[in-house]
Length: 269
Image (cartoon, rainbow, N blue to C red; front, top):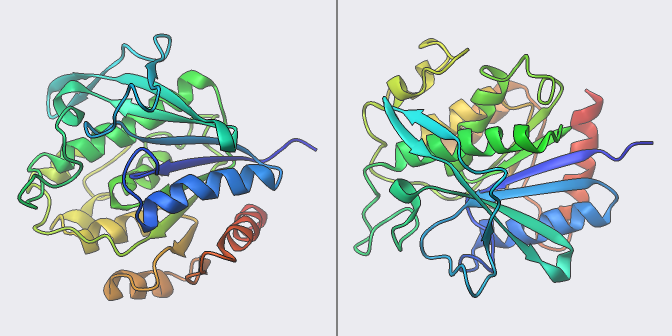
């Protein structure tokens, strides 16, 4: 029987970024799922704080070179890759000089969110999907981690719903305790109107808050996992009220087996 394929998309993975709840899961989960017999691919943003020489990142020329248009401006897409030898897994990095060269991740040195985090999230989401297309790799499960990945369910279910690589893919979204303030740029919603995405599809983010972005991700996902013990209460209620399959928080000793079983459950629906 052909191996099931799982695409992991995370806003943080250790050792490339400091250890956190998301980055630790971003590192351990793909390895654990691969060891349980599934095929994996893993993506994250190439934030400027990532040391390319120390982590042995190199550009993948055959995947780079495309331009993505966001708010009527062209932004070159650069793809880099590195290997975590102990896990026998590769990590693909989405890079762009305008969005990912600064040395901080999502907030500046004074703790203020970057004003273009909305466009950075859009670029990352589109960059991942375009790269997976170039790899000609068709995932059965796409599992997103962190709010920065929250637009991917919308794109998969709308813009790419008829693409044979993604048409049968099941979306899983993990909710974490990773709230941002203030809200994203007020023009966020208008920047989301791509091919196949209508203004009605993005009505949830009329006010582009963390809570509403989380709800948008839930709306276009097939299953939801509570990745933190404590998550936004209104987003959690939205999950439960949706009637969609969800998995309660699991601790570090049991979560990989629980997630693997959850994937199988989602695939059987």
